[in-house]
Image (cartoon, rainbow, N blue to C red):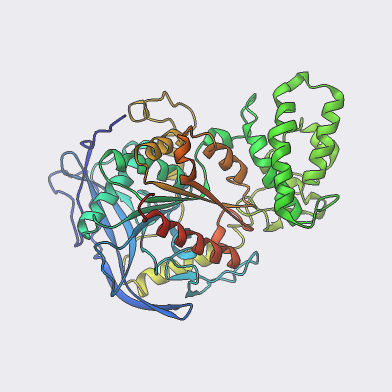
Length: 508
């Protein structure tokens, strides 16, 4: 077992204002905004949930006990229940470079930004009681990664200390331990929910926590990105992404009625596409330039039937349908493009002759303004966290561009190079802790992290057969942000609540 040293960074929690040591004039001061502690009630499905909200910062210090990062989080703790043994769930988005604004304001908290399916929200939006909240079942802690939201590097910390696959996971694991200590929650069942790159982080974090003796009951992987190499369609000679994305492209084409012979039901159609993708299609791609003309023509015809794209376009693309180009090509004749995060969304692009879209109508044209506006009002007025600092919903220019994707060999012990693959971390965590459970939640119309790619990855963990049932799947007629769609949000809440209850039951 690879055990990681916990001596590189120590952790301290400060619930009151903290100032960086004055003996280093170059040190960036720790923000001194007092934590906001407020009390609320929300009625969901006829049940009144009374809760305390804590919006504040946790200071991570380095081995010299000097501040290194100030991590912002918002915790929702239900009142009137024994906290010592109540489940607590830590949640985060990904990026790298994204805050947890999207999960916080859209998914499982007591309030959410009201959304209108695939219609754009008229700014500034409004908060409504959240029918998808998990607060009846678990306390919730939404965490912003360093460099995003209100989380900042402080002291003399450098980007290299936090902006990387393993550096980031170390910081989150340390935050969790610090939070458990500060709130006397070591006896609570512990759960992690990550979305997108947040699933990369979750698989890494759970392995680190368990190496340090912190048992985790369950992980929910929302729209998974566990093997980033398998999501890159630009690597010549590696056709995994073409196989992985095809069922999602078929689902999006089905939704937009773009198929020449559209089946009535989506799921049986996708089962057939999966079989083709991993069968005849994968075999044809593997043959490369040696593929014969007759087989090539048959594959082109089948891809046309499954995606609705013009056969001549498919042939010119050498049978490989780049998902980004698919977003542009599917409705090109109508002057429209479909969303990356959710292929049900569509919009207009200025350059209709471009081969790739210039924006994603899912986020840019539909929800971002409302989420950002409502959070900035909510955190100040409702949560009483009052600061003049700018909340960074995304910080790809600073965090994402500096991100170290290559894994630390000492941490992985597997010679992992190139784009990160955290499937070995997850497999190790499941093997070392037979009580750990994983729920993979997938949107059919997600063109960022395709559901079939997730199935392939989680199907290659190499687990003992007795552990196979510890990884389960759930599917939704939604996109990357599953919770934006009302029926999917309700189903997702029910699926996770059952998962949490099942994960706390004794085995046997």
